[in-house]
Amino acid sequence: MIDSKQQRINMVESQVRPSDVTDRRIIRAMLEVPREAFVPSALRALAYMDGSVPVVDTGVRPARCLMAPRTFAKLAQLAEIGPNAVVLDVGCTTGYSAAVLARLAKSVVAVEVDAALVARASETLRQLEVTNTLVLEGALPKGAPTHAPFDAILIEGAVPNVPEELLAQLKDAGRLVAVVTDGTLGRAKLWRRTGKLFDARPAFDAGAPILPGFAHQPEFVL
Image (tube, rainbow, N blue to C red):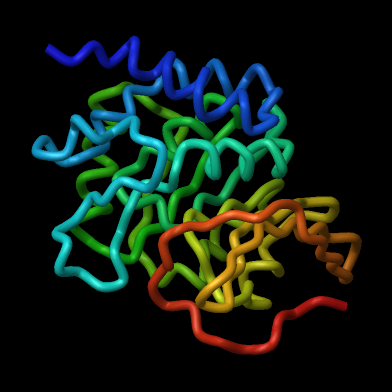
């Protein structure tokens, strides 16, 4: 029998802590949330592997996956999510990221384009009694404008750029984090809003599964 609690400990000690993740709230949340509950039963032995884990049929393109634990943890730390924060989780797939973020923030709005994944995420979060998260179906680049503004926005996958429509949903001083890729190399970036202006800076090299719906277009950074 697989000892999932021990796997969570191993994940944190071998993948998360060595990656300069020092926020104890993130570490505690990742030790508490059962990652295997968000993975198809046939793949649960892979739930804690050092890499992204597929959550839909492998024939689906682009592949839908849980982000690698170390990459997700570093993005969450970069976002600096406080206990009173309202967070937007873009591309939540089966809801693992939303469950972790819910332990860091006041509330989480999670957006997913796939109706079946929305249903799975909502049901799993309900079963785990995560009560401060709302999962919505919608186009990922559009975010959740009716629930904006947000203190932090996390994009749960690689994108060619971040559209103006998402950045506009940040509160003043809000932060958006994402892995931006040109198709070969990926790099995590942080955007911060100051009034009507947005500044962006690179943070660390990272790879992540491509998210659907994000088109190549100029970034909105003033």
